[in-house]
Each structure stands twice: as structure tokens, then as C-alpha cells.
Image 1 (cartoon, rainbow, N blue to C red):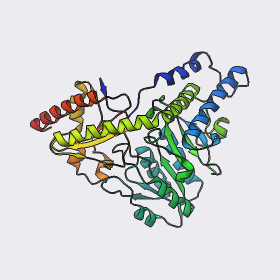
Image 2 (spheres, rainbow, N blue to C red; image 1 turned 90 degrees about the vertical axis):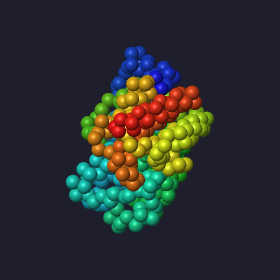
Image 3 (cartoon, rainbow, N blue to C red; image 1 turned 45 degrees about the horizontal axis):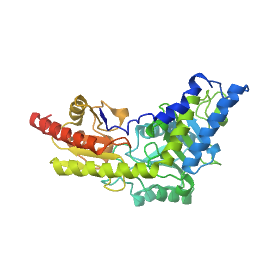
Length: 378
């Protein structure tokens, strides 16, 4: 099996699993209990909180654990909106559905939303963002890096603009966290969503960074967990794994991302050179280290995925949450692709575990599958 679908999820790192295991069966106390097992669990949760905060230049008290990136996106947008009785929100047309559908929900509740277009690389145009700002703008939400095409957005510039105008700035950093350096204060980020399973951590756990001083209401009502902002007994094993994954990601980020970038460029060069009518989607340089998104004319991406899977190669045509959808990717349409081009997309996302030999095999199989599909006209 050659796994090239790391944007969908990553393998749980062995050292992360090792740290998690005791909290399933031995140190299984509830962090809200005052007994020794409860206080041990609370120490573990707080230790993970500190590790995650350190990884992004935040304070431990600014990290709130969630069930993942989707919950964090929902919480950030809904709570920021509800802090105002009315107002204007700015986002982009290429956001993850967790942001797009939450913004649509807020529109139904009376908020006005401006949906920014992007350029052909998937990049926000700063002049258009600046022009969209109004006196009643309360929130800007722009993802750090696109989950489909890998383009990195001008986060520092957006943060500076938002800060200057007194507007809250939220970024969905699910794909970028652990892949590129992030320092929330330097970038002017007020709210940031993160998920553990994108950086060799466990599924079902993430966090929302909330800058100190923000009056953000609770998302889940109940007990006093997460400083009364996110009720419910903490997922201790998951949180411990999240902290371990964060430390691991920071510790080896430089060497890991340099290797992934080199492999990415090698893979992309071969695909563009050896397969006719193949185009890169996303920015050629300002993109995630392990992301390759290409379109092949004359084929349907889902058919290509099935053929590759039969040959032991795992890939995707876009976001995992939209797998099986009949509509072409909203991201690819937003950057100007025609529907036929968008339907022929293939997303290959790498990890530190992939090898050049694996990529050589993958290229050969992709070439054969694309040729076969074009002959069959499917």
C-alpha cells in the first residue's frame, strides 16, 4: 500500500500512541475529580495544553480543547457572531465546508456575509479584502492553507489589516498547523482552529485558540470544563496524544518539511512532464510542503481513484468530507477551472514516511490509468 492521502488523515505516530495508552486503562481518572487519579489526569491535560500553546506562541490559558477542527470552526464563527447583535462577516469561497456552511447558517440568522473570490492560484487578493471591509465588519475568516490545493494565504497581511481596523480574525489552520511555523501573536490571529489527526495525532480531538481578552461565549453548555466554555468530560487520551503530536511536529518540522517539499517537487515535475494535458492546481511555490493537486483533461477523477486504489495507491480528488459528492470541487471552480477540468482532479498528499521509490511507482501507475481512462472516455 502506498498512502498518498495525508491531507485526509495521517498515521498515528507510535510514540504518540505510547503516551496515550496509559490513559485508557491505568490512569483513567476524570480530570474533574479531586482524587489522586483525577488530579493525575488533570496534570496530563494541562501538560498537553502547555505543549500545544508553546507550539504556536500562545499561552496555555488560550487553548480550548474541542472534538476537532469542525467544532472549532463552528465555535469560533458562531460565538464571535453572537457577541454582536448584528454585523458583517468576510470569508472566502474556498474555505472548508465547516466555515462555508457555518457562514451560510449565520446569513440565515440575519448576519451579512461577503464571499471573497480568489485568484487563479487560490490566493486572497488583499485589495479586494480591504475593499470589502465595512464599518460594521465584525469578523474575517480566511483559512491558513487550503485543504485541497495547498495554497498558503497571506495570513500576516490579513492579521495586520484586521488588527488595524479592530476586526476579529479567525483562521482555519487545520492543514497548516504542524506543517509550517505559526506564531499567533506575530500573525495577528485572534481565533485559530486546529485538529490533531493531521499531524500524526489521534482523531476526534482538536482545539480552538482564543486570544486572551476576547469575550467568546461557550459552545457547549453544561459543567465547568475548559473554563466553562466547552462543557463535557475531557477526552484525556486524545488530548495527551494531541500534546505529544504537537511536540513531535515542532521538534522535527524543519527536516521533515524540507524532505516533503523535495519529494513534492519531484512528484509534480514528473507528472507535469510525463502526462499530457496535466495542470497544477494551486500556487506553484506558496503551498503546503506535501500537497500536489493536479487535473487531467478527459477523465473523471473518481474513476482514477478507484483504479489507483485497486493498485494499492491511496489518494483523493479533494476534501475527505466531500468524498463521493457528484458536484465538482467548489475550490477548483473558484480558481477558474471549468467543470470538466475540476472533475479530473487528483490530490496527492505526502508525509515524512513516503519515499522516492513509492512516488516512482505512483507516477507509473497514474500514467497508465490516465491513458486507459482516456481511451475509455471515462
